[in-house]
Image (cartoon, rainbow, N blue to C red; front, side, top):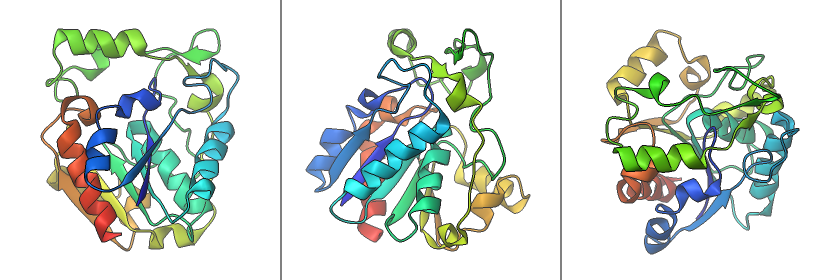
Length: 228
């Protein structure tokens, strides 16, 4: 199966470099996406530009792909399911949940000069980064790409109720599947609560399992693709 891989804020397609060979070994065709404004030097990119890039990859897949979103890009994966419910075989969300209609995409940190730079490790201390050593943290931070303000502050627009028929897998890294279930039941993630075919799975990692547990992440994604 074609598996489209979308990394979260400040990351480009190279974030999946250690996951790709493991997915290939398991018989799948991984496609990494470098989004407008997160790898091409275009600080004027908007959320709409990123959505268009994801949809172009969905449309280019020879078969119905599974779309994987990490962190904030969970929303991009879900926007693909909304725009192409008949084309997306499944979505897998790693370490995040999709924003609801009308919410900002990722207005999470201070923007400067039209971009949202990586804020340092302070906001991610604890479970998010406990599995990353100093060298790995330094590598991630030095490669971090400031996110265009037009992306971070873009408004999420969801239109097609058929998105709730697209199967979803939640991969739970820095939080547990039990915690995720509690948040869903409490109404904190309304989009997920309405999904008709939902699976949850735990992975023993922090917020960046593609870096710290790439082989195990590939195994979980391959299993989800096999069920799609």
